[in-house]
Length: 97
Image 1 (cartoon, rainbow, N blue to C red):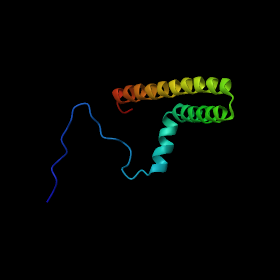
Image 2: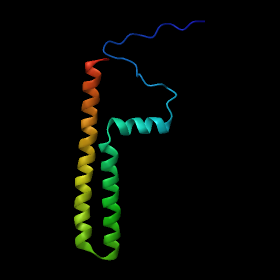
Image 3: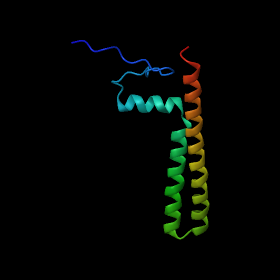
Image 4: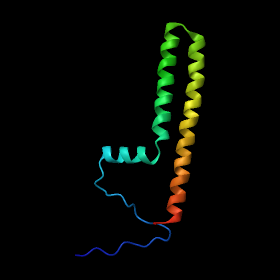
Protein backbone atom coordinates (compact mmCIF):
# COMPACT_ATOMS: atom_id res chain seq x y z
CA UNK A 1 0.00 0.00 0.00
CA UNK A 2 1.61 3.25 -1.11
CA UNK A 3 1.35 6.40 0.93
CA UNK A 4 -0.20 9.45 -0.74
CA UNK A 5 2.02 12.38 -1.64
CA UNK A 6 2.67 14.89 1.12
CA UNK A 7 0.42 17.93 1.07
CA UNK A 8 1.91 21.07 -0.42
CA UNK A 9 1.92 24.02 1.93
CA UNK A 10 2.69 27.37 0.33
CA UNK A 11 5.76 29.04 1.81
CA UNK A 12 6.89 25.95 3.74
CA UNK A 13 9.93 23.92 2.90
CA UNK A 14 10.85 20.86 4.93
CA UNK A 15 14.01 20.93 7.01
CA UNK A 16 17.19 20.18 5.11
CA UNK A 17 18.71 18.43 8.13
CA UNK A 18 18.60 14.69 8.46
CA UNK A 19 16.21 13.16 10.97
CA UNK A 20 18.98 10.94 12.33
CA UNK A 21 20.98 13.94 13.54
CA UNK A 22 22.10 13.10 17.07
CA UNK A 23 22.15 15.39 20.10
CA UNK A 24 25.87 16.11 19.83
CA UNK A 25 25.73 16.99 16.13
CA UNK A 26 22.65 19.16 16.60
CA UNK A 27 24.26 20.91 19.60
CA UNK A 28 27.44 21.66 17.63
CA UNK A 29 25.43 22.87 14.62
CA UNK A 30 23.39 25.23 16.81
CA UNK A 31 26.57 26.61 18.41
CA UNK A 32 28.04 27.26 14.97
CA UNK A 33 24.85 28.99 13.81
CA UNK A 34 24.74 31.37 16.79
CA UNK A 35 27.84 31.23 19.03
CA UNK A 36 26.81 34.20 21.18
CA UNK A 37 24.01 32.31 22.95
CA UNK A 38 26.29 29.77 24.71
CA UNK A 39 28.77 32.57 25.49
CA UNK A 40 25.98 34.56 27.14
CA UNK A 41 24.75 31.50 29.03
CA UNK A 42 28.23 30.79 30.37
CA UNK A 43 28.69 34.45 31.37
CA UNK A 44 25.32 34.42 33.16
CA UNK A 45 26.10 31.19 35.00
CA UNK A 46 29.59 32.40 35.93
CA UNK A 47 28.36 35.74 37.31
CA UNK A 48 25.58 34.01 39.24
CA UNK A 49 27.92 31.41 40.74
CA UNK A 50 30.61 33.90 41.69
CA UNK A 51 27.95 36.29 43.05
CA UNK A 52 26.48 33.59 45.28
CA UNK A 53 29.94 32.65 46.53
CA UNK A 54 30.65 36.31 47.34
CA UNK A 55 27.31 36.60 49.13
CA UNK A 56 28.05 33.54 51.23
CA UNK A 57 31.45 34.97 52.15
CA UNK A 58 29.77 38.19 53.30
CA UNK A 59 31.13 40.45 50.56
CA UNK A 60 27.81 42.13 49.76
CA UNK A 61 29.27 44.89 47.59
CA UNK A 62 30.88 42.40 45.20
CA UNK A 63 27.77 40.21 45.31
CA UNK A 64 25.56 43.15 44.26
CA UNK A 65 27.95 44.05 41.43
CA UNK A 66 27.92 40.45 40.18
CA UNK A 67 24.12 40.25 40.32
CA UNK A 68 23.99 43.37 38.11
CA UNK A 69 26.54 41.74 35.83
CA UNK A 70 24.31 38.67 35.67
CA UNK A 71 21.37 40.81 34.53
CA UNK A 72 23.50 42.34 31.77
CA UNK A 73 24.68 38.88 30.69
CA UNK A 74 21.08 37.64 30.62
CA UNK A 75 20.08 40.61 28.47
CA UNK A 76 22.95 39.84 26.11
CA UNK A 77 21.81 36.22 25.87
CA UNK A 78 18.19 37.18 25.13
CA UNK A 79 19.37 39.69 22.50
CA UNK A 80 21.56 36.98 20.90
CA UNK A 81 18.58 34.61 20.78
CA UNK A 82 16.41 37.29 19.17
CA UNK A 83 19.07 38.12 16.58
CA UNK A 84 19.35 34.40 15.78
CA UNK A 85 15.59 34.12 15.33
CA UNK A 86 15.50 37.15 13.01
CA UNK A 87 18.45 35.84 11.00
CA UNK A 88 16.80 32.43 10.63
CA UNK A 89 13.55 34.06 9.50
CA UNK A 90 15.38 36.20 6.94
CA UNK A 91 17.34 33.17 5.74
CA UNK A 92 14.17 31.13 5.24
CA UNK A 93 12.51 34.03 3.42
CA UNK A 94 15.40 34.34 1.01
CA UNK A 95 14.87 30.72 0.02
CA UNK A 96 17.43 28.11 -0.95
CA UNK A 97 20.47 29.42 -2.72
